Length: 92
Image: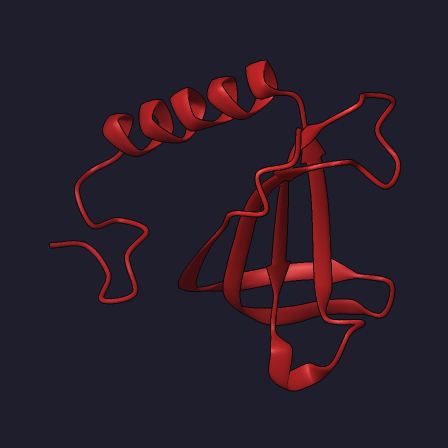
C-alpha cells in the first residue's frame, strides 16, 4: 500500500548525476512503488536541486531493512567523528 506521504528536508550537499556533480538543496523521502528495484514497495529517497531542473536528481530505492541500516550507519559514522566536523560551519 502506498502511503502518498512525503517527507521533505532542506539540506546542503552534492550529488553526482549523468553530467557530473551538482549542489543538492533538498531530499524527498516516501514509501511507494519503485521504478527499478525488484520489490512491490520501497523507501524512496530523491536528492535534488529543483532550481537546476529535472536532471539535477539522484534517486535511491531501498528496502525497509536497507533504509534502517543506512540510518544506523549514518548515526554511527557521525558519532565516531568529532562534533561538527562535517557541518556547514566546520568543527566546533
